[in-house]
Length: 301
Image (cartoon, one colour):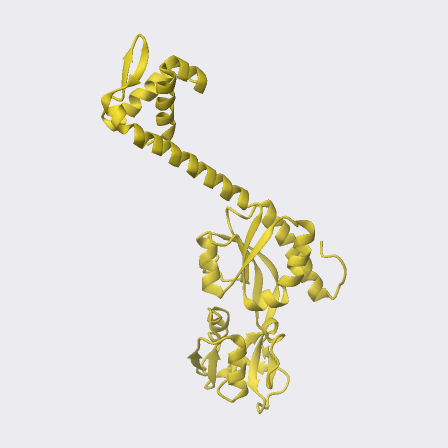
């Protein structure tokens, strides 16, 4: 039911005249009369008693008066809440990120962002691949720094930031030198990191032809726990350089042969990609990450 019709009816009763209400609302008298007739048809009831002296509520209209007033109050509350949320989109940025990104990249990015947009609050939601993508698609996040996943990026916008090389995590007793061939994971106990990291890793194993596969052990462990398991000779694993910057266990960390990496960037919903706040955040992130990997110093924006 259109609350505008109900509001017009209530105003007509207050003014005692369709003509007065029409003038106040900016309608023609015939237009307002048509609106009242449409409301009565919609409800299947005569709501107004019309006479040469004006209009008043019918008995049915009197019975419905409390509900009609409640409907108008609810419509006003709805519009106020919608306006509050519209304003919030310009003062709060809901950002998703991996824990490694939150630790290594976000402090510098947020510092740069605060300089150009000091009035925007950033709420950070740390999670794994499936969780973050789901929250983006359900509008629980405005944007997120994630690895590119073609199957999950449908309906989203994605802007590349940088490559995060994947590295082999091996016990100290491992005797490989230089790079670790991906094919050498075959027949080893492979500890799969949690939170969807398999989406970055499994494609690498799909290219091993005719040699078998690793013995994959799926875990629900943190990155540091995975490395500790490797340190105690319970298997091998793959993580990224960004993750390993914060971990210093007694393990060997070797680049892969052939090289592989996860593509990190900023994903947004299609409706949010032109939001001014998000565009400013993206520019800050691009500048900061570029400087991190070029060795430059100075202002990020």
